[in-house]
Image 1 (tube, rainbow, N blue to C red):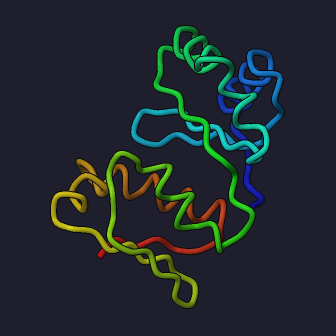
Image 2 (cartoon, helix red, strand yellow):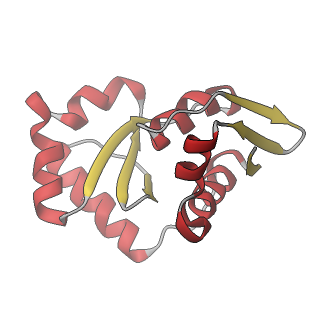
Length: 138
């Protein structure tokens, strides 16, 4: 999970920490949404009472915000990817060799790939950063 943090991501992380009082190193951009990955025990604190912190971040940044639990390892890949792509669902997630293979229906597959393969490329970058594996949709 070693990756370079861009300057804009650093600004997002600093703002997130100031608003929520929760420290994290992971800020992901997927489908025009900012996703912050925090330890499982800190999710309630990061969201705030009645979602106050998420609403405040949304007002400041003007972007959709999600707060999800950070994966502990490759065994958390299915839950982690499911939280990122929600509300889109998929049938199955397999891990073979050095590849994460996602099986989805035709409607879900189209939503997961996105126009001009934008979401597919974003998810490939995420799986490479977090799990050091290639990502494929079948």
